Amino acid sequence: MGTFVFEPMQPQPQPQPLLGILGGTFDPIHLGHLRLAEEMREALNLARVHFVPAAIPPHRARPALSPAARFELVRCAISDQPAFVADPRELSRNGASYTFDTVQSVHADFPAHHLVLILGMDAFNGLAQWHRWAELFDYVHLAVASRPGAVLSAGAARLLDERSLSPAQLPFYRAGGIVSLPITHLDISATAIRSALVAGRSVRYLVPECLLNPLRVHYSEPNFGASLSTQSASE
Ligand code: ATP
Image (cartoon, rainbow, N blue to C red; front, top):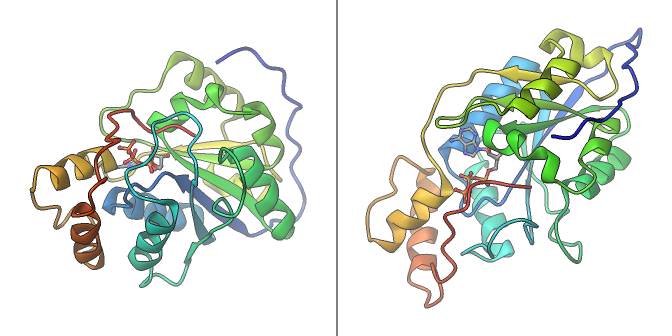
């Protein structure tokens, strides 16, 4: 993570409500994503969490499931939590799905909220590879969650050190802070779920119940798994 000089953050007198954004490939969504969103919602008192599936993830192989299929699975997975929203904004944009464009667009739609971009530690470690990553701090706070197997990189630790805020401080700062929280460790990844599906193994209790049938149908499609990726999460 290169050196970058950031403007100092200024607190505001009045707190503002917080809106969470959880972006991802969601190929497919699983209980690790849902628990991440739920624990962040509770710990940070987020009014809502928007789940934003990437249409074309910039730094990884083409997903096994189409953008429309991944979005439908997200919709189904979150249907019993009114504070969760399936947000299709990246599906209607052309070209690579950059998080920077997404946070700018959410910011324009919800000016009365402070935005909190939720990331697992593996994704936070790769932040410096993201398109216009340093400018993200003009629009959002980051909430970084522990994840099994992920260890904070030296660059990410320095950034966290510079911009660390407590959960209670977030509503008083417009953007630019980072909170790091330990969450329940669920060693679940979409990669492992795709591998299990291809090998004909059960994915019950790794994904919400309502995904089991749709995933079985997708799995039987001729091209499913053709682009199976072992890459870890990125933008
Ligand atoms: P893949 O295995 O295909 O790379 P993934 O399971 O990492 O996928 P993504 O859609 O790439 O899922 O992840 C979206 C976001 O959710 C990322 O910030 C990632 O760090 C986080 N995340 C995913 N799974 C977990 C988990 N089990 N615990 C904590 N965070 C997670």
